[in-house]
Length: 169
Image (cartoon, rainbow, N blue to C red; front, side, top):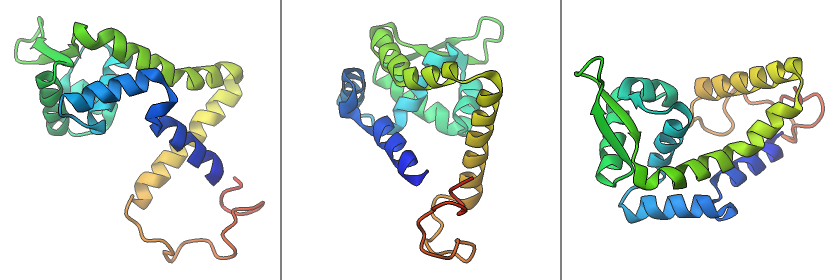
């Protein structure tokens, strides 16, 4: 499982894997922005124009952090903000038309393997797959990113994660 996760991460992070990723990352960097801005663009493709608070929930970040990222993306010409017609106090964030096609190509290309995986699974398998991923994410969040290696509750043994080990489930 660890090897598979490593392969997934490498494929997701590899900007050279797809022309679209190179283009998006190149333009983001040229605007003086970084990789932390890309998930905001991705979320806007998936969720359409949304208020900052909704975008923050989709990204599991604080509204203040998302507001800062959106401001920086707006400065780089990637997003635009306009008042919500129903509530003028709220700002709606959307992709700027100048970059929309490029960002959408990138996002849909990155989502293609996941969509294909979900389509290949039956309803019960899909539910189990999603449950497993949710559990993994929750356990990672509980453990914390900076936990030291060799913590007291780490499994003993050779660490191979072979059959019967913690990685086999």
